[in-house]
Length: 471
Image 1 (cartoon, rainbow, N blue to C red):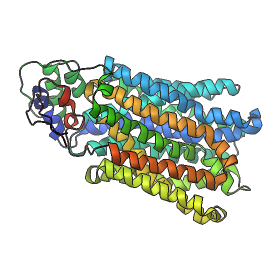
Image 2 (image 1 turned 60 degrees about the vertical axis):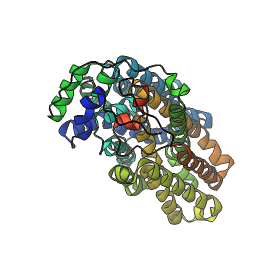
Image 3 (image 1 turned 30 degrees about the horizontal axis):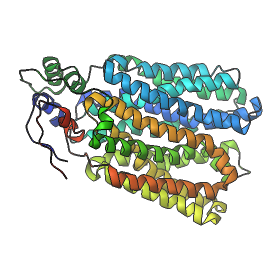
Image 4 (image 1 turned 180 degrees about the vertical axis):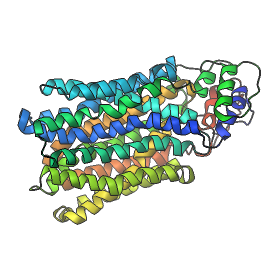
């Protein structure tokens, strides 16, 4: 549906923020938010190498591997929901940084684990921080962004994952090649995950409350006007007060527009993560299935080159094009190419006996994962829910994604045994197609719209008096 064009007090105050060009505060917010995703990706990759090293040291079983690979992801389900709702109730500023503390403390403490159960528990702590970082950083970057480059800015925060994916195997390779004993190497790998998260705790605690929250939830007109003027350098003159907006979670479920949007963002993210996380967390297992006689060092180096050549460029090409091509187009294209790549590996199983050909197809799937839905499923929920429920809307979406990721990471080692590599890839192809169909059926394109327009916030704003018409 479309909405009337009446400019409310909220629109007047936020207009300079929406129309300004890229400024220093945008990039300061980007690095503050992005380092959490660097840590997230580093932890995502490194646990696969760590568990491989721990198998002979702690005599880990297949069940042990399944639990370690998925524990942080199951915790992220809880973290996303908890922090998503907390930031809607207490404010972005009041909560931001707590999730980084969890990331740092959990990563550092896990390096001192003395047994499987201690490591499993601390990975759960890391997962709580990872889950909380998704709604916190995504929403904050979105609410500080301008209209024309919002997709680029939010996508760039998420693109920091690419560097984490790169640094993970690089650290592992350096430690393995330097002759560090496995009993020490795995501890260093885990402990280093605390560094980037700890580096931004201070910055996150110092961040100014976002104008969208201070105005949309607290109704602080004058305070918000002063913040917008300070950030943009554009004078903001307005008088009057604004009515309170509906902040009940039920808003997401009783309004058809918001409900359909939530189904689209949550389930497309879940389908993506089922295909992506099983692939990524268990990349070492994929390499082993491809090259049974290869060493851990060889497998890790192979993963590094795939990430360098395919994954990292995919993130940044997406960031550069998302405001031109649109979120919807990129997401559908990514899902379709993912499905095609996985289908090739499924229908032509002989490819798995030709390492170079297999790795080429595998790399193509990685590029389009990062270029497509792995980026856009993060961007979408940061902009399509009203400010009063934006955190929980994002939290539910991220939680669904992490649930799918956890299930995939848990089952992937078993699937590789039961279905073998080709059969597992066929399953991922079907899941990818489901993501494409859902995106086409449910999600709408928010590019070029203000955040209030993209989120249909005027539908619940008495001050805006929108005129709704059917599409």
